[in-house]
Image 1: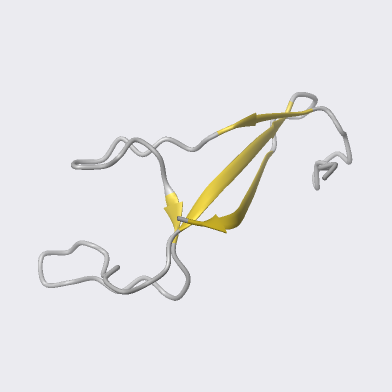
Image 2: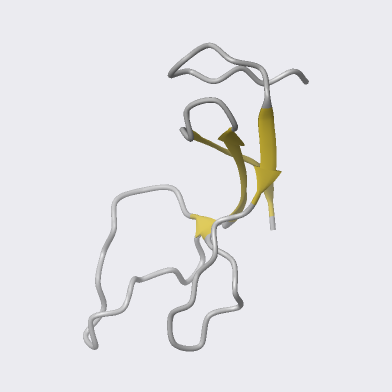
Amino acid sequence: MEIKCSQCQGFDLEAGFVEDAGESSRGYARWIPGPLERGVLGGAKRFGRPRFQIDAYRCRACGHLELFAPHQV
């Protein structure tokens, strides 16, 4: 799959990932479908919802990030 920057139309994109440095995180972010719902303690309700790996690409020309969530984890 060839990825093109949606901002400047460049093709020189560098693969990377979005870090999550929050408390009790695993070090990487995930995408969860549906609106954000908060539980009693303020955290996001996630139980029973699918989670998807976020693939991130940074355009070397303009710095724009392109994010994709193709794989359920």
